Length: 417
Ligand code: UGA
Image 1 (spheres, protein in one colour):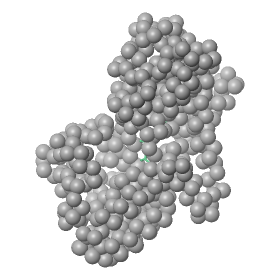
Image 2 (image 1 turned 45 degrees about the horizontal axis):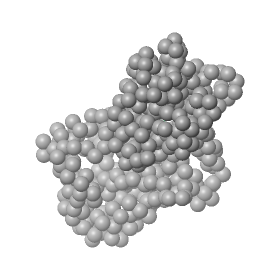
Image 3 (image 1 turned 180 degrees about the vertical axis):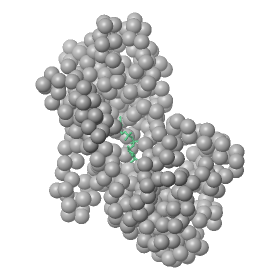
Image 4 (image 1 turned 45 degrees about the vertical axis):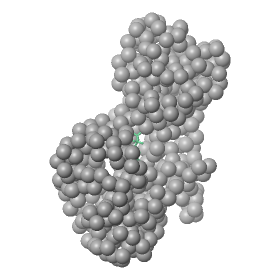
């Protein structure tokens, strides 16, 4: 927003994050974002605070961008951070303003928060809510924000629509869908459910390919030439993880159930199950390569983040596999270009290395679990020189099988002979 020319005040309740941001440092790894942060700090258009009072006095438009994680032991989403924002901000809102929700929420949340906002703010109905779901991907956050595929505006007044159209005008020609609260909320749940389904579809095909001795990578390529299907999100492998797709499809099922439409989304249970089975299959393939048991076995793991170009390890398929192998008695050493610190904090019991080569030393089997470019570019000869046995399982179908096989590696992949 600062880059687009607006005066921006960012608020977080975590003082240490605010301190970092004020120094021009990011609390997360996101390509291109640090440049943007520094440039806009220098221009003076971007500042930070922990004070809701200051934020309320400052803003004409307030974006709420907090997380809605999965509740412990349940499928439903925890929306308490959203309520906390509205309860903290509203009492200071004493003039006309727009509060805009960006979080992924169970349908019906916006209407409930809109009522709460009006009830708690001195400005009353002059403090209005809008719902404007966010579609950015981690690793591409800057690009997706400055060049979105579409903008969805859930609004209940022309004033709210006008404010948001003005806010996004600097982005140029972007399709805008103006709709009501529940539709805007559902668009986001539907988009992530579709993406998760697409990934699990190709991974279900991988399961069939495995028993039919077919090649899912070639199958996916052949499907991709059909415009109606398309090749994006059709990469077979270890499946989806992260802070969004897994918990969003579960929260979507839970909410549909509450509303009496649980049958509509039972297929998402399968989508989830297929996804989790890929992790188990990965462990099976690795175990098979080392003779049926991980006891007394050294396993080199390439990747900890849930996907490349991110340091996010939330529901990371890579770490899930590493943890399982550790529990089965394997000695696991993990390397990841940026997610090592996060992984170490979450799983101090596992082993870590500062390079792919170090993770490979003495390994009985190597596992590629996150397709960082650095791993795709690895030299099979160099890696082969330090391992105990040239065994590799490519969990992301990212390596060239022939190259590795001709370097003497026993190469296995998910969904391919
Ligand atoms: C996802 C959506 O793509 C965004 O549009 C959405 O805004 C975001 O969730 C959100 O709800 O905030 P993100 O979680 O950053 O974005 O990551 P994705 O690029 O969707 O990847 C998710 C997982 O699917 C990763 O673990 C990735 O490795 C896996 N994946 C992706 C596959 O296994 N195969 C594919 O073909 C594509």
